[in-house]
Image (cartoon, rainbow, N blue to C red):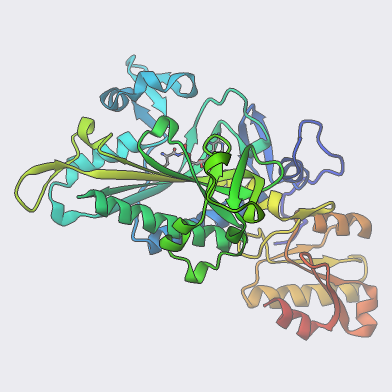
Length: 426
Ligand code: 5CA
């Protein structure tokens, strides 16, 4: 992609309304633009990241034996009257009346819709277990939307719902999801700590929140220092359960199982939340199956959310410096930024165009800064948008046959031939 064609309206100044790094950097790099309170347009650069994150989440959900569906954003009030949540949900629910005076709502979550699907199509224990997920926009009319997309009103969520015949089955689904989450977040270079949680409006009796450590996090958490060195490849749920973590509302200093020297406290951003809630929805919505003994039983359920749009902010909180974002390769909007320092120089242009062509041919997603502007501004923009690799070509490259390759993460710079530069980033 050529910068002269692309659209990323970068800002030099820090926007007044942004209080935390991720919000500032998302606005400054032209990833998002606010439409109204808590509601944003995702501009091309931001959308690429959102898609990359969605894809990682999707791959790990599929790997954990889940089936993707796409449920609507708008739901009928009727379903929520059956579960009893229509009146309980209160002002956070955006309620809509259609032209026939029917009560509708913009879904804050989808337990009712998916349980209704299950009830209509699945009748026998032989079809269990089943796990369905979707990646869809949700709406919660938050009292205080803040920190940009971190606490929005409209936000993108992955929500998965599991259906099992027994409590043991439901626990196995819960464990599979816990493990999938640890892997998902590790692929984004995040340390996520599963913290025991209360289950709030979703209800139920077993629940964990996944917290990313960041100073600007909304909750205070207490955890065993061993969490910081969890190895995903050897991680099992049993190992997880030997480790302690709790948030301020559940942490009891008198009964804390972690010795003082291993107990750490930090602030966290909640990027995921898993719940086991038994038959809370299956009974009122009629999700029963025939068991092996021929009797009808309500299915055991859980639900599992990931805040995909919030993750964009959380990743930036974990990976940035004073100059801008430092994207992990797995989610970066482009892998390489190619800087042409002198577009008025034909020889320099030719070198850049050649390398650009070769990068594309090698399947590398590259942003080629071919704009007619000062080098200082080009360097600043590239550091700001935070692509993992920069290849810098200027008039000097014409005589030396070399370019500069910079790793945005480590700051390491190398002078390499064009061939070696290509090898380095492929
Ligand atoms: N039905 C369950 C799980 S499928 C559920 O709704 N869980 S939740 O309420 O905890 O939301 C799941 C995740 O969505 C949260 O962990 C958080 O990362 C994200 N989320 C929730 N509210 C917002 C919001 N206002 N803005 C951005 N992300 C949010």
